[in-house]
Length: 302
Image: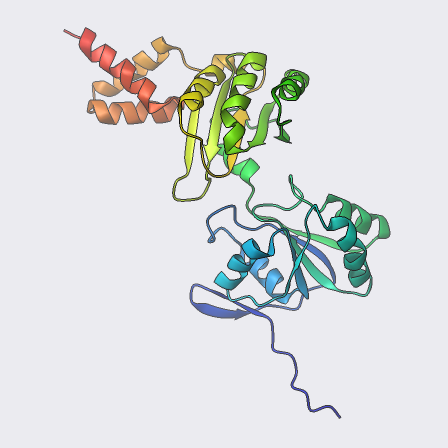
């Protein structure tokens, strides 16, 4: 008879308290993780990561920080676009044997502009179990903050890196009857917005940066306004999501007259500073633009 001690129960730590994770069912568990704020993770996700045999991670260095934060000691295995072809057969073999694996990306929901689609497709084809543990998504986080229609949207991911290919693809997307959602790198943001303005015209848009983090910002305006702003700014930093309104959404951008009317109502009740903040929030327009309109109004008043 073996004298080896039984394995310790899987556990995680949250709010300073240690919790034991329930046993995990066999299969691949696709786990959404925070896009910036480490508190944006569910108890189910933590329990899954703790109870898995191993966690497949896009970047083990990034994921190590998350697991360490919650006291999870599950082994990490790299699974990214450069090694996926070599790793897939090994992962499939493990799952055929009844293994319990978790798949995460660097941030957010796996498979959305991240590796994993081919792995899931092969598992489905073989009838092996796949489970999703939903959670954070930069796409949805940006969409609900943009102030643009959310009933129908199209996620494109990253546009081609060069202007010619980018404009061609934007032309193909122009007629889609829904809000467009893109990922973009900081160094290409100004050029991407300039191309979008040239192809799509003065549609309303929003640039969401560093979502859920301390320096989260969402700048709203027409595409020409956004392009002009980022052309004159230092290179934006952090993860960026660009939202563009659907065809016909130009009417969603309030006219100067509509902004002035809101300002007159607000100025009759509160200070100029408060009125500007209130109207900027109501219309989704840049505070600088609303402030300029407010100064114009107050100068015109007797």
